[in-house]
Amino acid sequence: MRNQVLRPIAMTVFRVFPDLAASFRLRKEMASNCREADRFFDKRPTLPEGASREDCEQAMQKHSVDISEYLYQYEFYKLTEQQRDEFLSRSAMRALAYKLRMKFPNDSLGLPRFKEQYLGRYTELGFIHRRWLYVPESSYEQFAELLSSVDCIMKPADGSLGIGVQKITRLDDPQLLKALYEKCVRGKMLLEECVRGCDELQAFHPESLNTIRFVTMAFRGRAMAFGAFFRVGVGDMIVDNAHAGGLFAHIDINTGVIDSEAISTNGLRVEKHPDTGLQIKGARIPHWDEVVEYCVNAARQTKNIITGWDVVVNDKGQVEMIEANNRPDFDLMQSPLQVGLKRQVLDSLSELIGQEIKL
Image (spheres, one colour):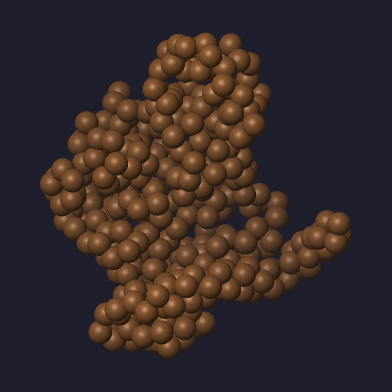
């Protein structure tokens, strides 16, 4: 009850003082990062030369990085303070996104939390070609018809990081279908027809759907492409999410060529996929011009200022939206080349919005 009373008051204050909103969000993020780091250091790990717990804690306080960014993604222990200040941490990006929502409440509504809402909107707009159901609002007959005709992906409507995603092969057993339907209703699950990526992208790791995270900025009908990276699963993964253990590599947004090694959030760096041996660095994303046009057009249809679109080129050569994220992870865009983008992000936002945006 207390939170229900205080939350509207806090939101009113944050809209008047958006910098306060960013500070509040950043403090929450940093507290979580510190707890994670404490658990890591309590195991007494062997650290790279130049890294230390004391330096990590100082970097967390000053630059709001987490343990993965400090050790593996940005290798902060190798950088000067000036070089460190060039990076926009994952936590700082979330604070910035929150500040923008408070500062421009009518122009930064955010994407709906629940996936079925934007799936419905973008299906109507023609961006999504696959079949899907939000199971709690679907009949058993609709559920059984879809799952008995195609392989499907089942996932929580409000999930993230690839958690809870399962692949379900075609089912025609009424007893199994009924039990699964009831489970999906209780769990508020989405059921989506499996998308088959094009041969060029699936060849890297056939077990996962390998996607492109394409980041846009948009404001009052104007939209621009900002950056992109390629994501690919490893081992027995059926998802490609970087924070679930997948690999990611930077894409040159002008050419569609992967221009970095593929890395993981725990320090692995490879030019070739560890399972298939295919060369990742230097590979070209097919239909790149269509990918850029698709994502920029999608951005024009949302009031979310910074959006990360998870898209794939499917086996028909179409660009297909898998998900949209209102807090895209700039850590994954910066770490493959270890080039900080904080100034570029703030400058691009300032130019787009027409006023200086600070963090």
